[in-house]
Amino acid sequence: MSAKFIIYIIVTVLVVWSLESVNINQIFKKNRYYQARIFYFLLAASLIYLVTNFFWDLFTSIKML
Image (tube, rainbow, N blue to C red; front, side, top):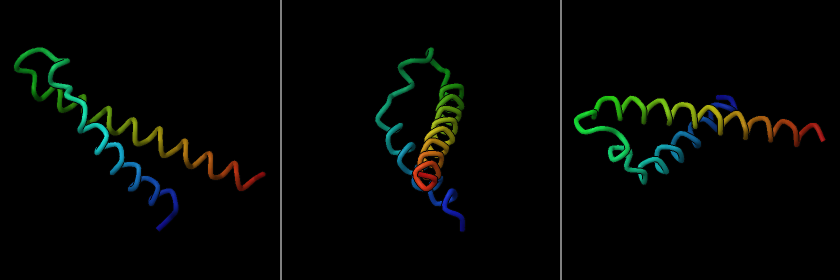
């Protein structure tokens, strides 16, 4: 198991946990439940990718110093 995969797992748990506090159903129109869920999934996936790559680049740059 690579270190980046472990970072992905940790960040996935943190992002999903933090997004549970946001009520995105109030942002969308009435009866648009599936569109809100797809948006939630895409938002979570993009945050997971961005945060993981940020930490990965940070850790690799610190090793280079």
